[in-house]
Length: 344
Image (cartoon, rainbow, N blue to C red):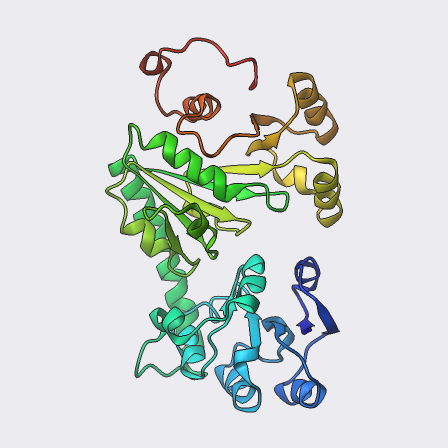
């Protein structure tokens, strides 16, 4: 059984499908955690980093690593500039802290498949030490880097006309991985395409060596290394990295249970999706049902995808979606009009 220490990300971590024997919420010092769990048997500890007092000070994490078996701890990082700075991540690796992620879904994966040094060696910058005096410099450099990356991205996108399409689950397990794969198969008939999955490894089950994997720390580097491509498809799962993409498809599987879970988790979700490309995926809805869905959710559906046989090599439904996104033309494909009125 596992234990959970949560603070800011408590609501997100409550939805993880992991057996929990004990859960504590609040802000704790390393000594507090040691006192609570030193004589308590558990398999893995899920640790929300914001539950650690003064966690941005790397010496606090050092105190934790010295007193606890960090091979049994999976840390969910926050999005602060200090924590996501290369110096901080390198210091974690130096302390033997290998199981960390910003993706909630990756927490369960790390519990079942813990990292070794080989998996995090890319973050390890030898002879680099981070102290308190670095933190202000880290924040300033991060701001500069963020602006520089944004400017570079805009310039390179304009010069190369590359399309970076993100595919993101809105309802749980809405099919982003499979759809990314099928879109790649459809696009690569006429375009130079690469598909990458972020912070997960489900691509391995598709037995396609051309599919790539990366993590959110290295995604910008991956994109930069593939600017020679026509299209980059990014399986975002449910990672919030939309800014990297020129377009994002937001997948909703319109089953009653999944929709109810979605609304309970975030009652304002459809307000947040205003103006975005909502895709109904693995849908059994007809045109009338889609209209009812739009009326009830006060949203606009960009496209309605039925269940697809992923063993096939050609998908007319996806051809029309890609046309709507600006790929191909009707003349190229010898098609006219809509396909069974499956999209508006």
